[in-house]
Image (tube, rainbow, N blue to C red):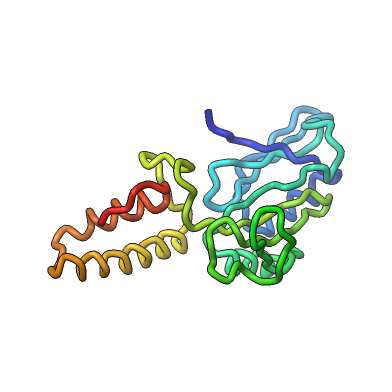
Length: 197
């Protein structure tokens, strides 16, 4: 089973369409049946899940969708891009641990899952950006690992390069099959599996 679509309730369909379009989200389609039903689908960049909103789509109160997570590989860059596109995004913050109060700025160690920023759409539907660079073990199927942006892939390559340099220091020789080592390292790192030595 794959989560494909999340429905968000809005009061003004055209205003919501303009907002999500300005964010740079892909407009996948717009369908109407008479005057009582209209649905619009947008997909955030790199996401396998889309959003639907419209008229006759949900009976939920506009703005009642809260805690909609958008996972990003670089919280500072993602926030800056959204601000450049006109979104009113909170400052980046982090938590020292579960249940702890928010502290200004990204996590000092840039630990995965600890840095956030928030924004709302014009109706008040609440989005939460969360920086995830390495998944907890078991959270990613290693057979289906993906990198959703060039920034994310470049970061994974940089981490693999650094780890591979340590690998070559340990072995004392150049690794002629470094592409296989990089691939194994990058997939296992993202999937939370055992890293090659």
